[in-house]
Length: 261
Length: 261
Image (spheres, rainbow over the protein chains, first blue to last red):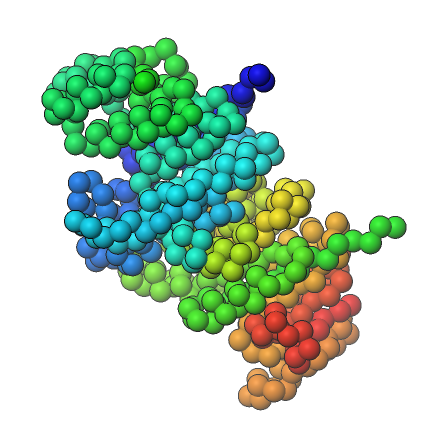
């Protein structure tokens, strides 16, 4: 069997994006990574700031944004506009030939509107298809795709979709053709045993450990859906998932959390 | 000599973009156009509206936006975010596989900051290079590029660039490989002999007629730079330029203005 090419799928969140110098430094490091790579970014804090400036109410339930039509416009302006293009132009500066994408662009990520059950999340989409062939086409042209957290229904409606989930879905879809490493980059060093102790990194979490931690309610609310996304990817074609500080991109020997089945 | 493939380069302005139904109808018609095509869109009115909501001053000189850092963020949010993604998702609805682009994406349009001479336009870029090879690559993948009026300097700086100019520059660059028709679509029927009479369309303007009209100050201020863009393209690889109402996209027999050398 032919050996698969390596592909790095990295997701960065608000804390890096909000800090101009930290972002520039990360993009410089990311640009230096050899081989195929994909970047996914969030930007919730910026969207909330813009909403506040525009006098539009932001409502969150369990860390998820209730996305009214007005909020969707703000999300699209912030994620697909300002943040995505800041990141793309920032990568071009370091000779990384990047291409900013929402799910609507080249129809790469299709989603269904999340049904209103206990909560009506509004214009929030759950991913139903990642067009891995098109993404592979971009990679083979030497292009680094940069995804923001916006998808579409292929019928004219854009959606807000969680960036961690998009990273997991892309990693799984690309995992059919590539040997994918999925890297969730954030401000801490990894998943912490004790949230008060920033050094208490759990270095390895397998399915058993994850189940134990979850059942013991030992994982913070914000981390739980992230871990779920990690294991979703591990169950579908992804060999390794890392939760680490952004510095991991330039030094993969630093202490962090590795997840596996 | 091998015959060149046809390529339509169409530019739409604010009056269509601002009107949801008119935009949907245009996108439906545009999606039906067979063969290779590229869409370029403006969006100045939407940017001005957002600036006003955010309490940011909009200053125009000769119809050009003075682009402060704050204005640039607004331009990027509006053009590259909301408008570009609304258009891309709207085209996907009609099975036109479109891809939204700024000049930074895949490094397709590089610009220099306009030097501050009589007027300091701020973050306004003058196009120095269109990467026609990459655009051709997208077209050959069956993708319809959709450009907004944002470029970059390849060194991390985004710019506001006039959409008419971008259309002209793209048409010229692609004209080396394709038989390009450039179509400026707007709310009137064409260039008018008499601005009071909406039916007084000048059906053909060649270089001689253009010079006469210009010197007699018979052309409205808004139309002059548009005509200059048209003739720039005609001087560089573009065979035909049309200034017409949006309906021209579905009926190319309607009365409009054709420009040639």
